[in-house]
Amino acid sequence: MTLLEQTIAAIRPADPAALAAARAHQDSLTKPRGALGALEEVAVRLAGAAAVNPPPMPFPAALAIFAADHGVHTQGVSPWPREVTAQMVGNFLAGGAVANAFAAQVGASVTVVDVGVAADLEPAPGLMVSKVAYGTADMSQGPAMTVEQAVAALEAGITVARDLVGRGARCLVTGDMGIANTTASAALICAFTGRDPDVVTGRGTGADDETLARKVAVIRRALRVNGLAEGSGGSGSSEGLEGSAGQGDPDGQGGPNVSGGSDGSGGVSGEAPARSALETLAAVGGLEHAAIAGFVLGGAAARVPVILDGVIAGSAALVAAALAPGAVDHCVAGHRSAEPGHAAALDHLGLRPLVELEMRLGEGTGGLLAHPLVCAAVRVMHEVATFDSAGVTDKEA
Ligand SMILES: Cc1cc2ncn([C@H]3O[C@H](COP(=O)(O)O)[C@@H](O)[C@H]3O)c2cc1C
Ligand SMILES: O=C(O)c1cccnc1
Image 1 (cartoon, protein in one colour):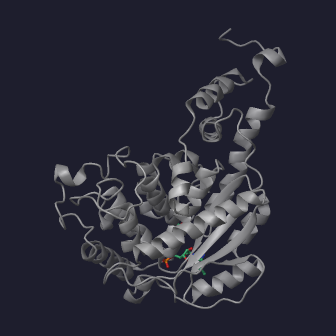
Image 2: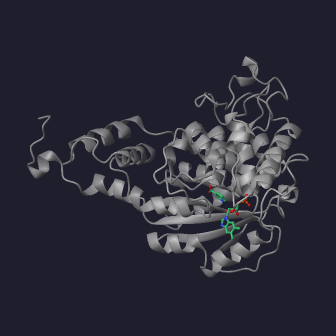
Image 3: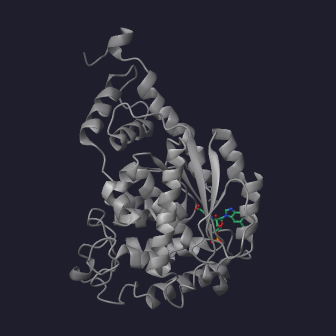
């Protein structure tokens, strides 16, 4: 078995007994039932994921920032030059980015992983080099990657997750750096949710109206060129939608789908037969999206929770979910970014974001901000007294 297949085979969905025990435990604590709102759901979710109640404290956290470049940048989809990807890697390594400040604030370690930066980077502490290619090809002309490259990047992400967990991390936070990666993110979201580029494409790093219109057109072309557009192969037919990861069919993603073939599971809506998740990833994804999907799978296989950052992580999680539906049970949506596609991805995954501050940065910043909330939710399960133990009268008793 390959590392990817092994990892997928090791992933278990939430444990029903631990979920039930965590719910009962929440209800026995000295507070009105439900008073902690969404934090109660988070604590119960982590118990299900860990298969034990209370779940382990998700501390310390480790942020991995996966960096890569994008061939589609040449289509003018980002206001920023491509070199900023490599320059920001230098900034992360020097400790000067927003992600570094937020990581310091929450006590998280920072690892930067070069999975596809279009430049050779100087070795430095905190930099892991798992370069699969010097950036992707232009998805508007054909597949951005080969399936082999996508698998190599997925496995790089799995290896990073394993490594960080091996070094003591008890919570993983996803991060990304890649100029033009909101274009690839929107394309993946269209492919996996069946939504239109018009509704999921956002301004990324500040696209003006003209750039936004071009971005939508480029994504539409990429989906068509790669056979992923509605109408490019039986769109809307029941055959095409069956077993696909299409909108309104969150449970129809089938089992592990790593064959690269067209077996109808884990693919995209609007095509008959549905394309495999791996082919879809290779067609319109980025190397950092593939690596983040692998990072999610690696965390899930180790039963270590993964806090997802923004739209890049959300789109990568769609890939992970299509490959291994149980992986979603190990994810927490850290925040909801201002990119419109992010909400579509989270809806499809059935995840509720913890923080909403109109942030649109990436790097892992939104995921890091959510980490103290996730810790607080779990600490309640370890430290808060029950009605019985504290001698507080329960209205239900
Ligand atoms: C200085 C700078 C720092 C960043 N940190 C994250 N991103 C974010 O913006 C990029 C995606 O936006 P688009 O698709 O519009 O290019 C990604 O690199 C993402 O991580 C940054 C972007 C810039 C310019
Ligand atoms: O939603 C995000 O994470 C995001 C938005 C814009 C640019 N980079 C990332």
